[in-house]
Amino acid sequence: MTAPEHTTPPHGDATEAFDAAERAMWRGRTEAYAGSFARLCAHPVPALLDAAGVGEGTRVLDVGTGTGTAAVAARARGAQVSAVDADAGMVAAARARGVDARIAELVELPYPNGEFDAVVGNFVLNHVGRPRTALAELHRVLRPGGRIAVTTWSARRGAGQDLLGRACEAGGAVPPPYLPRLDPAQDWPRTPEGLARLLGGAGFVAAEADELAWEHRAGVEEWWSGAAGGVATIGLVVTSQDPGTVARIRREYDRLSAEHTVAEGQLALPHIALLGSGRRP
Image (cartoon, rainbow, N blue to C red; front, side, top):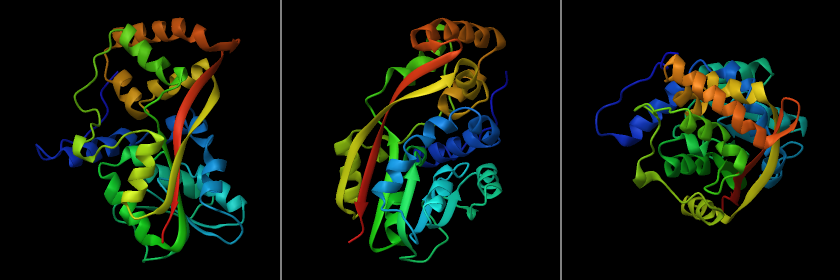
């Protein structure tokens, strides 16, 4: 296995280092994501759209659209949907599904003030080096009274979230030095209270957040394919190892998967995320 292409930012700039590592992490991995972790991330979409008040005629911006799952679901409700993602491959995949998607980063959106009735971001705040700046930009493009809803992973984890990480540890994997590492000054508590405070600090009122817990069903090979394809942080860990270590990780994965097996080749993987929402005054 070879390490993925990555960019070394100016030394000492932790925020730019995080953003550069994130961009490199997703580059060229659209297909691998679509075939593995995309179904997992799709689970909260109905609740996300409900929290943002998305319905017939709502002008919606889906940020970090990925392959366009939330945008497509919003369009099915009769909303007028625009979408952005920082990765060109993800934008191409969303456009192939009929989504009006553009390449853009959250901290600098190509839309005027007050353009949208609702903004949604499904598992995107955890991929930006300046989450407060990103939320301020989402606040800017919302009209007064418009709603925001976001999901992100929680500090409290379901057992299924640790399966691949446990396999890496048991297989002797050594994390590479270019994993995305958020500047501690930019971090925030990954709890319902922490997410609600983050939204409130960005100027949103009636900010609230809660946990979402669900059991994700996936095939043994499907779940492994995301890591083997270099998707997300766990994918960077797996694909940076030598072939012998990857083989050991796979053996440990097969062994540990027995804890979550519910049918031949099928896993039930408990996950926990956060859903937060608020309104621009």
